[in-house]
Image 1 (tube, rainbow, N blue to C red):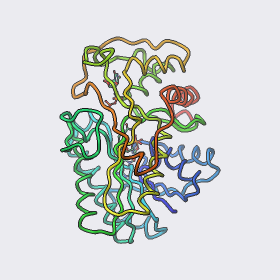
Image 2: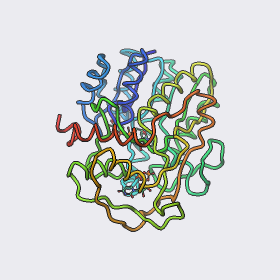
Image 3: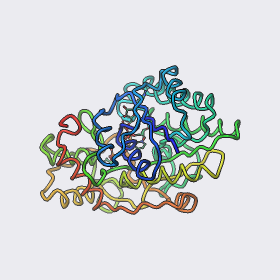
Image 4: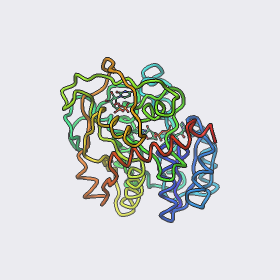
Length: 339
Ligand code: NAD
Ligand code: UDP
């Protein structure tokens, strides 16, 4: 298959591009490098021996996107492109709604004009909101989110479900990721956030290489085993493999389908810190800080549907996530900027 990967220069997209190429698919990456580096393309080539085609386009520019489709029409699209910082979305809601929803509307319109109807979309566990109880299952109830970023995912899920309902040609996979962490085992690609990381594991890794002094743990008074927040961390390569499984499933089914991609196992902040300390080989200094606004005590996936319908299951544990994350960060202390 020829797969167009929007946002394919980003963290999850680059790992998925590698898995797609390794499985024999042809990849075109469409990215404006707003939150990523062109160096990633060299790294994908080094890992796979194949250089993906690059289309440096902003998906908000529909004409540019149309040209990408006209030049080499894909068989399917995986749509990662978008903005993802929760705090920034609270401060700049219109930018988030315009970008995340605008890029998706442009994309499905151009797909339809070129008779391409197979789409995998990056959603998030954030759509389960704060009213449902974990483990979250796909048909567990009303979707909601506690911030504008999450609301864009809720809205796009609705748009895609309505589209598939109105036009039965479409095969759409909505993948609800839990907490992607780690890196490709080569150490050549990984997560490279701009500025101070919002997420736990990039923060730990930047403390480990001396870019940051100390980790703040946001709360140790939650009703959990050790008092810190629990999440379902999933190795980014397992996540990448879940995308390929979804693409293959969509070849034999129509409509819009939501699948959770997680491990089904919650891990506490303190247990994540311990796993990374072991991989890094030294302690990570931390102090306990107040709870972060909007954080849930616990979140983890019911993975039954993905296992049954996609024949996919995460296989890499927190030890592998820490080992591979550390290999990436220790070999690229300044991320792609140091390349
Ligand atoms: P990322 O920022 O590393 O990748 C997104 C890519 O999209 C970047 O390369 C960026 O340059 C590109 N992009 C942004 N706006 C664009 C535009 N207008 N036109 C073209 N390209 C554009 O993020 P990621 O962590 O790889 O996340 C990928 C997707 O998965 C996002 O949709 C995100 O919301 C979703 N997601 C991520 C997580 C997570 O924890 N990383 C969790 C759940 C869902
Ligand atoms: N967390 C923390 N310190 C940080 C970043 C995160 O203690 O610097 C905690 C956070 O409160 C949550 C967990 O780590 O319990 C995962 O947070 P992250 O931001 O990585 O993911 P999300 O909140 O999206 O699940």
